[in-house]
Length: 162
Image (tube, rainbow, N blue to C red; front, side, top):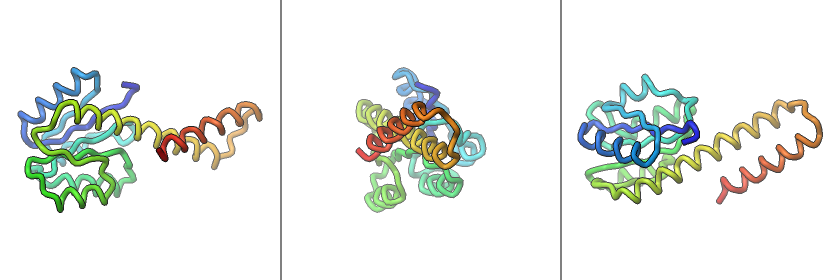
């Protein structure tokens, strides 16, 4: 899906398998990890997409992974899934910028809708950052090309706000 990838992290192999299969059948590119350590040491920050994190991982928590990504400057959308449904943890995750917080068993249609929203948000964020970078560099282009790019950047920024 436009080079976007879903990074799925869950220490339960049956959940990892089921969600990976669901997402792949829906046409998404998925990278699955059974530990936060493996994910944080192997994922590529430059690959667009989103992360789906289990709250309770064997070697840490999904919240720890969220903090680690933020400390690396990785602003990709994060979707949390949990078997516990702990309201306090959900509030912490959302305050730290999570896109959504879903309870297991996850409803397939709900998960797919949230993933699509996450990928769209990531695309818009990356486009906005690219527009900002281009503006800051003052790339030399013909005035007409610059105007078209500025209009595109304004559209991206407006869409990102909605």
